[in-house]
Length: 87
Image (cartoon, rainbow, N blue to C red; front, side):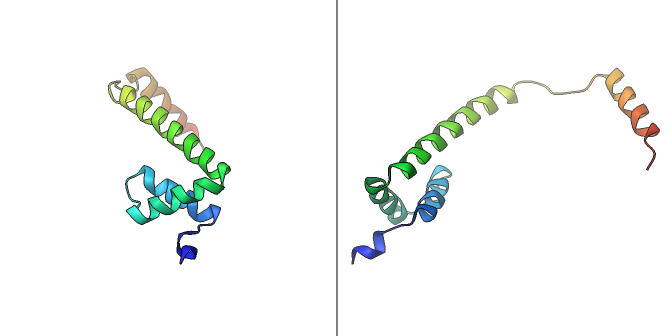
């Protein structure tokens, strides 16, 4: 009966990734938490993964407010460099 709840580490990391994007089912979350009781490595992976996602999201928010454009001088210089490339 409990064999249904046993996960390999590969399955656990897949569920971890799905969980971060809100795609994991309730049963998968239960299985993942049960796996954490016996596997501290997967628990640490999940913790680090969540931290990286949090850092990325905060950086992405601040980056959206910036306008990323090339100056006209840079555009012209790039066009000249592209013209000079011989294929």
